Image 1 (cartoon, rainbow, N blue to C red):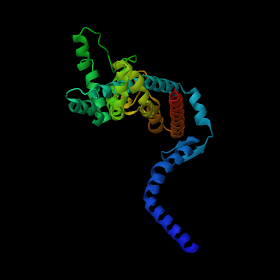
Image 2 (image 1 turned 180 degrees about the vertical axis):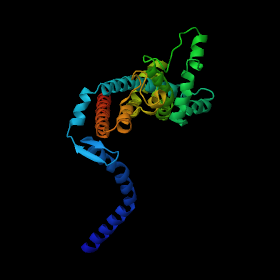
Image 3 (image 1 turned 60 degrees about the vertical axis):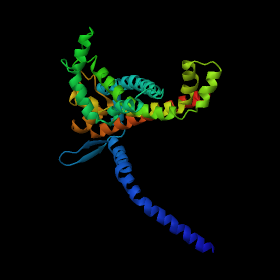
Image 4 (image 1 turned 180 degrees about the horizontal axis):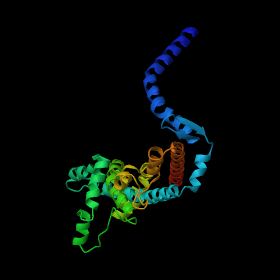
Length: 299
């Protein structure tokens, strides 16, 4: 009987791995394999044109970052982008969700309208905003009509990154709005009814019931926002035609990685090292956010 049970266990285990094998193969081929190869590249000077060569350089690629002026600019632009976009898109998403959850007329219509930017391709949205940001475009016409100063949105180094921020806050907030809306509809009505009996007004109910109840959701939204914003690439690439201009004002870390990997000869290994450095930054930022959210949940 014991041998029969062991045989059955091995048969079930083998069947389970047989079903898992296709997924494990895809995982190894497209995720684990590229990561291992990227680790290999990060410690080598790579030449891929002609006869491929891999020269081991140890930690030289990582040490090079400390002396790379463009890497520092890209990191600063990325951090500035993250610090501004993540809070703004989070607050806007919460405001939109709370507005829709208030039971306004036409809620379904506005929900669809708000969510439309999320369904649109990022590249298409960027091209639309490039037309709107043109010096003779829609935005400058509106600013001029209300007596406000116009801007050279795409050509002014002081404004170009802000233009990308505005576009991304507008286009990403609806996605998080849906998450907040689901969480808001999950809050028990009895909590608000009890608060009303205690004489709480709308703002007090929102601050003392809604916000604390949404803390786990807010933590998720912020973490997803951090991961997404640190990886800004396509909008910056399209806005600047891949250069990160004007004057490196839209240069991000991911765009710099792309330039070193595919636009500069012999720097594929350095690009891999930059990618790992960015991954570490994202990991640290995410862990800090998780730690802060856990500390807040204690109160």
